[in-house]
Each structure stands twice: as C-alpha cells, then as structure tokens.
Length: 92
Image (tube, rainbow, N blue to C red):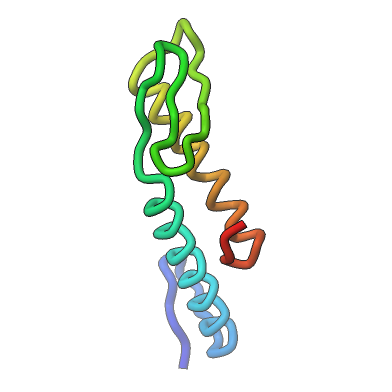
C-alpha cells in the first residue's frame, strides 16, 4: 500500500508513516505557536508587541504599515515555530 502525494510520487508504508508523523508534529507545533502568540498590538509607529509573549518587534519607521507589521509578526511566529520544532515539540 502507498499514499500518493501531490507532486505525483508515491511513498512506501514506512515513508508514509514517517511523513504522517512529521506532518502531525508540525501541525501540532503550529497550533501551539498560534495559541501562544495569537496577535500583536501597536506600541508606537515603529514597534509592535506580541500579545502572547510580549516580545518587542521593530518596524522600519519609513515602512510603518500594517503589511510591514504583519510580516514582522509572521517572522516572529516562524522563529517560534522553528524553536519549538528544534526542541522536539516541547516548549522551550
């Protein structure tokens, strides 16, 4: 038995099990990051703060827009996800 994935190749049972386990770990970690770092608040025109961990995230003064803040916050969440996955899914 095999599982077909979107790029047109198939996985053996062992590979499929490993793929499913890794996918589940990533999904769980992403959910934990979103719960722990749900949103940000503007502090000043060049600074936002994570509402979950209170991390200070700088925004370039001349690019102080919601899009810039969203990108900075997404980078913060990505860094938190990377740290969580590096710790084996355990909170650091």
